[in-house]
Length: 137
Image 1: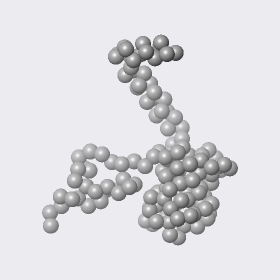
Image 2: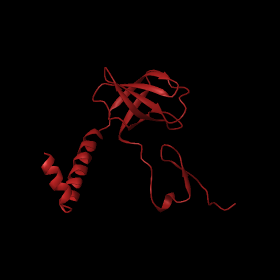
Image 3: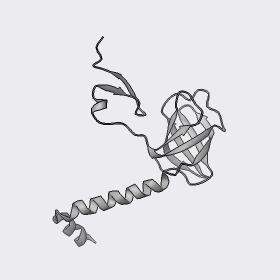
């Protein structure tokens, strides 16, 4: 195995192909988990929220969204606990959250927009574009 790994590293044309294969496999794996699953809140302690799922657990770092909540509340999966439960970190205040609130797995991590539309903009922790720092007064 070591000899194969060394040969791959020395062959500059083969290494990018293998990296692309790994990325493709990761994308397929992410697509499988992208099927949204529902859970419910079972505990709220400050910014830490435990969510229980009936089906498969979402991967660590996935974004979960609390349903029927204004403003939007995003939870990031930090740990898998036993009994189909994940421990999450809330990206905003948890005031008003109670056990039984429904939670939706988005199927992907928190995403941050990139590109020309983000230049000079302030972006919050969940990727929402805020005011421009270059706005004329």
